[in-house]
Image 1 (cartoon, rainbow, N blue to C red):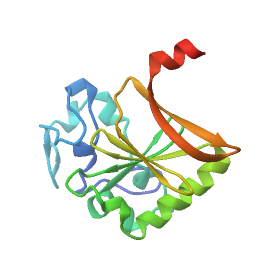
Image 2 (image 1 turned 135 degrees about the vertical axis):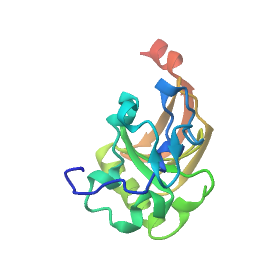
Image 3 (image 1 turned 180 degrees about the horizontal axis):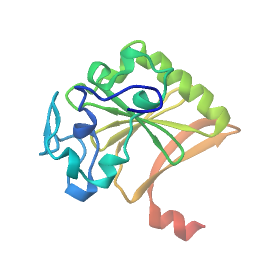
Image 4 (image 1 turned 90 degrees about the vertical axis):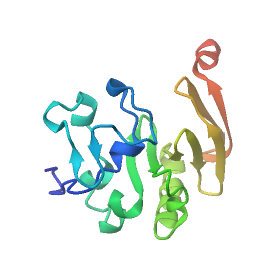
Length: 170
């Protein structure tokens, strides 16, 4: 049980949308050890990355029952610089439904002030959500980074670059 008092229960969506390196499981496919709606069949021996993972719904009491991943079809996670909204690939537009779309947009508005990004992840495809628009970045690989073009704190453009190219520029 988490500090919020919430438990996964029958929710197993993270076992589908998250990649699990220790099992060579890609994002957007069910973990071979998961029985959807029933849980992990190797729970006592599950990988460390599974042991340490908690979605934001488990941790943040401000996310009400509508945000429960098994209900919303969205798993909320954090990244180094923001929030990631991971969609069940079977419901790629779940994030566009209300109340999710409005709340995601509010996070993006707040994020521009606090240098926090909001990214929707559908498989390997990523969409950067800003206060004013959405930037469809297409497939973003593990060795690529999103670079935002700013006017003040407002995002006016976004591109994907190879991490090695960023390191050469620095």
